[in-house]
Image (cartoon, rainbow, N blue to C red; front, side):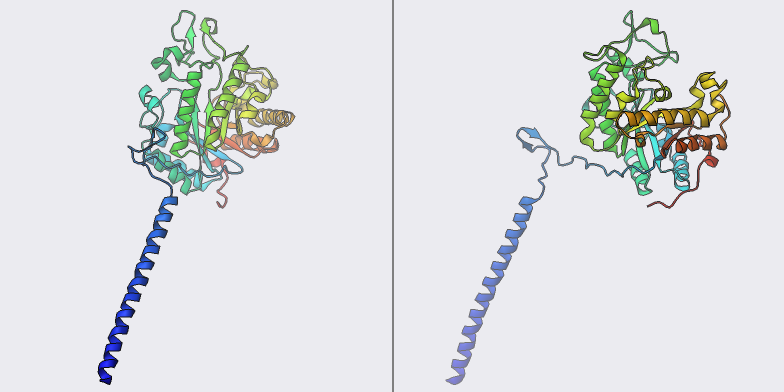
Length: 399
């Protein structure tokens, strides 16, 4: 009797224990499911290609915004054509040069004078125009490689000198008085600096460069043409402008406004003479007009580009220190007078033979002129991308 009561009681208690355990398990499972669903509802929503929000279709395969690295202080860079950037063995030599020397940056053509964009694009309008070529087929991977070595990547975009688009859209081109396309002495066609359609096209190209991973957008040929049959040219001005300088300033402002949301620096390449001349050089460029709209300004102070007799030098190319020091000291003073800072200045220096054979010593004189003018950043240009190693200091320790 006692045993039957004892075992009956144990069986009863075991049933109660099983029921309680099952209830607790179900409660815990339900709570876990609730927390998971709650977190899921707070996570970013991924929309399929057929999903739409307020009537707008959104793809779940949208490309991620690329990482960018901050602007080095100071910037010391070289130029690389799009063709070289797409040639792995050649570009690797230049990457090695950057790693082994004081260099920390590279300026790469995204769109050169030909008007061809150096890699595939995603923008539908750009695809329709068809300017893209696979010059750099692995552009994103190449920039990732540069970033892995802490090398700053600058996208160079030739704006109004554009042979391809002028032919494709002659209504956007600089024209002769008879309505035909005007060309400079080299036979290259230009786009109208007053055309907002050209401005919008430039902005689309710039956004593609940022999406590819470039850390800075550099704009060249942001001016009116200068070397050609100027008596047979039709040059309209942007809305309301009375002259070339005002028209180009409108473009600067438009560019700055429409690219501000990208959050990366903008820079401008200007004629070397803007450092010392206060007029627009008949091309629309005035230093003070560029200052508010760009993070960095790069005057092209190549000594070979100054005329015979400039500052009483029979051959300015043979006097790199004097020419560049005069230019950068003058532009530094003008930056301060305009309420800006000389640290925005980042001149282009010469590493090519024109007017004189440029030795390592002469290139070092160019660099020293920059330093003596109170500046510390520079870029070196050689159209052949063959740089004088002896002109560069050894690599500092990189962070």
